Amino acid sequence: MLQKLVYIGNQIDLLRYIHQNFELDFCFIEDAPRNKEALDYCKNNNIKHVICRTSKDLYEYCIQNNIKIDLCISCYLGIILKEGFISQCNKIINIHTGDLTSNRGPQPLYHNVINSDPIATITAHTISNCQIDAGNIIDEVRIPINYESDFMKLVHDSYTSFESAIKNIIQNHYSKSLIEREFDINKSKYRPMVPKEIKDIILKAKSLNDAKSELAKLDLRYLTI
Image (cartoon, rainbow, N blue to C red; front, side, top):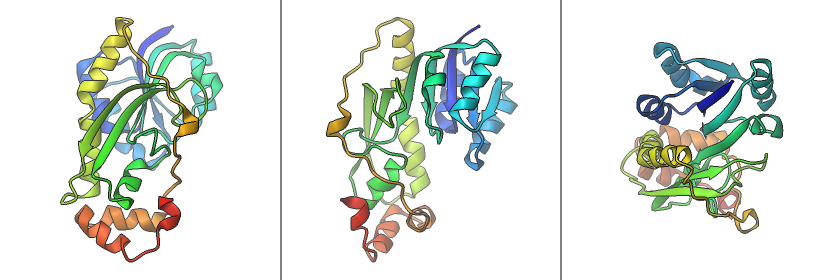
């Protein structure tokens, strides 16, 4: 059974946008505390969904239910997709809130703040193997970081700024006119997980400027190298 459009992840803004503008067949939701908004949205809007913990869970669900996926959009996902599940999809596109050249890894927006970057980059790239943030680039959107606002506003703005891009990506996939730009992972920088105490400073600050003031008291060279 072919599922034309599937969403996998926990990010509510893009899930809502895709659901409201396209025929969304199915959602895979990660079994994690951060999934609550996405899970509630699926339940409240009668979107068929299943909760999974690992890529193996995703693969086994597809096999057991005879599911093949045409286009899978991945966003804000803590699961590393493996070859089994990848083989069930004609195309997987991940939305990464970082520049793949300079800001690969699981927490790019935190690194933007730690580095006092003026711009955040949101990247859509393909997933064809289990390497992290390593596929061909499809589109990039850049937004200025407003240090007068808080971190969650930055997260929200990053994803909502990508709505028109995701619309074009899905339409171009359906019309077979999607263009990919080759990405060389060997010329990129992977940034590590940010320690909880550093994330807490950024999350709890009333503004990103306040967060920067607190971070300036710490030695963060190990995160900025």
